[in-house]
Image (cartoon, rainbow, N blue to C red; front, side, top):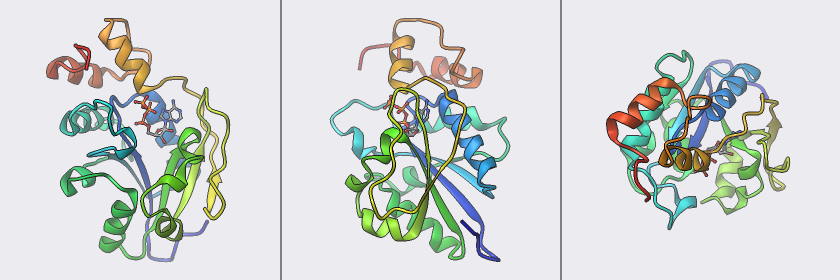
Length: 200
Ligand code: ATP
């Protein structure tokens, strides 16, 4: 994978981040370092269409948690591009928007192994294939998976952090400790906003 002489190499790591946890942060830092990315955006989904039919915490609350988590992580940026655009969150639209601003940029889309296998269900995936390289990371509990044929990808080794947002929501609801995998700033944000305190 080579960057152009003038273009930045931008990592786009999309997620629902409901809530953001250390698995997400570890992954973002490892991929940024491994691929020498100039920017690493954690892109908060406005309407995560993959989770249609499931209750999801309001986007502004999820964004606030991501911003709080990254405040002391130089080189990781909380992105509200999908919140500001509104509507369903499709990665192809985000990539096109980033490349409008910086046509020479090279965009790397980061996904966990659980997501890699289902990339051909993504909106306008043929167009996305033409525009990006994927960085695929293993995820504890998910079999290592390659993307379907046609995607340019690299696998990036990351320290495994066996956690999911689903697990964290249950732990928060049950009043169980979460400080092993939730940054303090996120715990404060959860308390201040009264999140995950009742069954959704
Ligand atoms: P949920 O449990 O609500 O489905 P999640 O923990 O999977 O949430 P998402 O925000 O949906 O979190 O994940 C965004 C991306 O991060 C996906 O590509 C997913 O594969 C990846 N990811 C999430 N947690 C981990 C982890 N612990 N290790 C590696 N990848 C992860």
